[in-house]
Length: 87
Image (cartoon, rainbow, N blue to C red; front, side):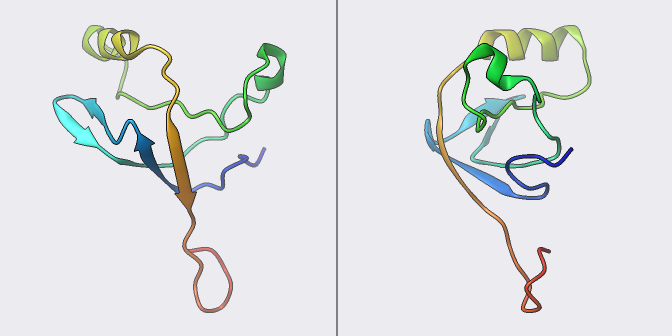
């Protein structure tokens, strides 16, 4: 299944302007999965993102749980080569 936002696309956060993961502030993320094919069953937007906190451990579970569900504003861009093909 293809993702709604293409693989390799960069998502840039606008509001909030960053997310802190493992003590580092991140403003940009890369699309690496397709998301949830059943998003519409919950009445959500197809443009939701989930952020990977790393391999499952008590620390990553705690960090992701503390972050919870937060609405963010973002835009994405996908680089295209001169040949018209996505890089």
